Amino acid sequence: MRSPVDHRLLEQTMDRGGAATAEIFDAAASALEEIATGRRGLRAVRHPLGFLCFPVQRDGDRGVCVHSFDASAGRATPAPTTSPVHSHSWELTSCVLYGQVGNLRVRVHERPKEPTHRLYEVLSRPSGVDEIRPTSRLVSCEPGPEQTSARGEIYTLPAGEFHTTIVPHGSAAATLVLGRSLPGHSDLSLGPVHGARHRVVRQTCDAAQTARTARSVLRRIHALDAE
Image 1 (cartoon, rainbow, N blue to C red):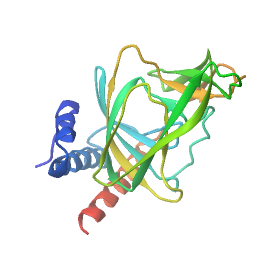
Image 2 (image 1 turned 45 degrees about the horizontal axis):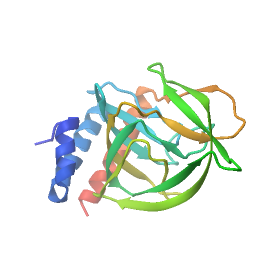
Image 3 (image 1 turned 90 degrees about the vertical axis):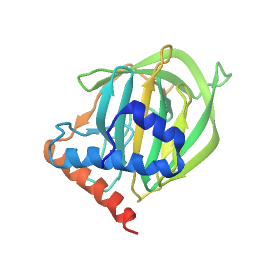
Image 4 (image 1 turned 30 degrees about the horizontal axis):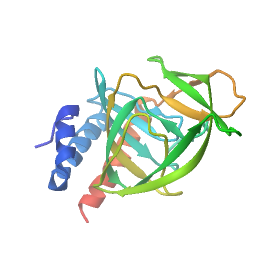
């Protein structure tokens, strides 16, 4: 029997880990099957950071998504207008469904003598438009520790932690992501010192592309299940 796609139930399952990851894979497969067959009428969104997002559930400050990282799938995502280094206004717990996903933590130093970046606030509108506003905060940064997670492994990222996500070039990966927004945090990105305020429109896939990608992710999950 398929597990329901519910943030609170999945959060409890991820906390248990171990053999409970089978329930996570069941929940992801259930949602993807509904998307692939058209029973769940959502559309995948091309995220500015280079992956496809299936917004499976949104319930107040909580959300569940499937992220697909595959540069060979369909039309390329335009290059981001800011650095890929960013922090979330929400805490994230993610289970890798296949492939490898790396997260490089980045140490950000405010008010350095020689700033290399400016912090930009990213305001995401329901219309699919990201409004990117330069703040007064000038910073420098340096790489911190990197964590790489493989199929069945669970990783977390707290709200406000700067990082960049890395998938090996030429490979594919997918994750089931739980997010919970926290008050007092903003979505931030590192960008050029002298950049201007601007907008980025997130591209929404049509029904055919959404279903095709969902089937591709499902095939990869089932192929590994059969090994």
